[in-house]
Length: 345
Image 1 (cartoon, rainbow, N blue to C red):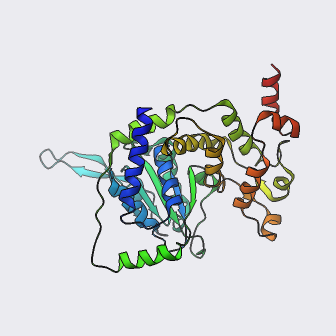
Image 2: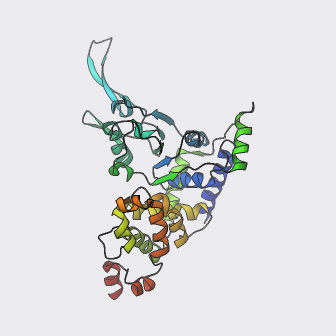
Image 3: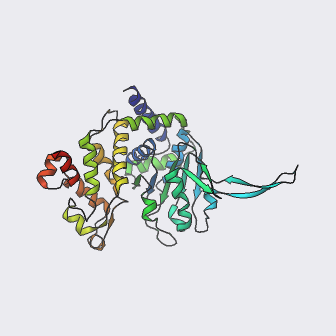
């Protein structure tokens, strides 16, 4: 309980520090911090000028972590991210040997700015880093610092000269966060703040060791079986070829979410529960994180596009459709065979 209170206090302090620079966007900030404490990566999608880059930079200022920004461009090479080996000569002995020069990915927080502007070959350079938290160059593995987060930004309206991220890499991101326009009163405050002579400073709140300890707290939060099974049912309902998939999923979805979505639903729900000062995970926690976890893991088909349906619409209908408890699921016939056999035994 003391550990949960410590994490809740750290969360409140982080929000207070970031609010000195970022006006509004409370939901985005919450989802960003949930991904940090759940040890996940985050993709922020929004039109230019919504402070996506500033938000990540402010977060790095509030955390006592190393930070590097990579501006993704069409001519960026994989070695520009991971680093490269160069020949170095010892002036005393004249001996030449290869030395690895670390790239900008060797930092606690890596901002991949406009990640869809670089070709797939360079995008793939982040795959090993995001999943294995290491870099392999010249047959030698180099461990990345811990904690390690990739926070990427993407512009949804500009398609010319861009390379959409493949599903394999999208799946590595825990959250896909949509950054929307601010409210009118928030925009007034933004203009006042950014056009004045004052420059707010952000204090350091957490160190690397403290973040690692808080991540362990999130992992230790207990989750009831019915909450875990609900997260699994929610994920499995996105797969059109499964018996438990609703009719609208069969009509509008080409591919659904994989097991990683179920894992992230539970992890994110744990982090959200703790950040709200609770010691257990509820169904509402899973529902609250369903949109950012599932929206980039559901691929809609032509029927959905013709009717103007987006993955968010599918997730919203799933939240209303998927039964909460097993009794309700059995009555509706939407309980997976795995759970039916477990209950029968």
